[in-house]
Length: 453
Image (cartoon, rainbow, N blue to C red; front, top):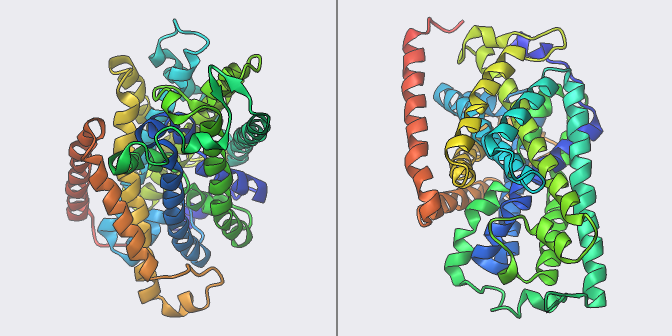
């Protein structure tokens, strides 16, 4: 694995911290929150809180293993080391597939929101432009990726904090618009906290979970972080505070100003709220933020898929040609191949512009649940196989191993929930095909592989 060390450790502490924040604030919050609020009402905040708690424990499991061995492509490495070669193969390729599918969702989001200003521009054309721009960014040195993600994350943070501050002022002033007075009482006065009952609350888990896709990205950056022992624990431990502020805080404000039953499920509540309160050009500003958020997530996805293909190639699980680096120490060949597959999202935007976002987010959710589940299982095996390393770890996962099983059961519950909604049910039929293909591919590579070198 010497070759993997050729990746340049160009990501500083501020890059890692903001990449972690960017990963924790996904497009699912900006774009998917409308649908989630429509399904469940104010209780959506409990969905986000529950998911945030579960993913925090998953990240602590990952963090404990990363401090033991901070490597790029950490999921596949830990899966192979502690579970078996089949787990490394399937997890590595599934994580690559996760971000390809997620990238399709993000370029779809950009296409949707560009229509706010330019309704005549085809959705697929915007998607194509985004793919090409992000490829150019990722072909530069890793520091350039870190800088872009840093500023994308700053834009998201400033916007959400501004929304919360302005929202609190409007609530205190009792601002009235379209017959509705801003008040915290709006959280319970429109049918209660659970207006759609248990079914609405449960069905919202899929889109709410998708909002957190990318939280594990810190693990992929470990191989290029300058000081992983310091930056990784800090980035992981701050996840709960970020969820409380960015998710719960923004949703309290949104639904206090703009009651849940007046939010359009097909548009961003962020755009709706700022447009509603009459701040000049505010809707356009938030629209810009949503676009940068989607581009940020897609940019992270291209980064992740490139590094994962590079790692898979180094481990003999992908063509050796993908293990090459360019003069900027970037896996250029792997990035180009990932971009090629991501561009199929452009075709989907041409063929299914209305349905593509829900379809690809449902598929991505199942694949990410697999990766997150494997991290938890690998951590259980790590504790069992390396008790001396686990004992001296300075970043132990709390409540292990009991909490590992609780989080795994929660993930299984979310997968079952996908089967109850008509627009997400198809993912349960499509995604297993991917795992069957991978298992067959693993058996073929194992058969054709000479004895391990």
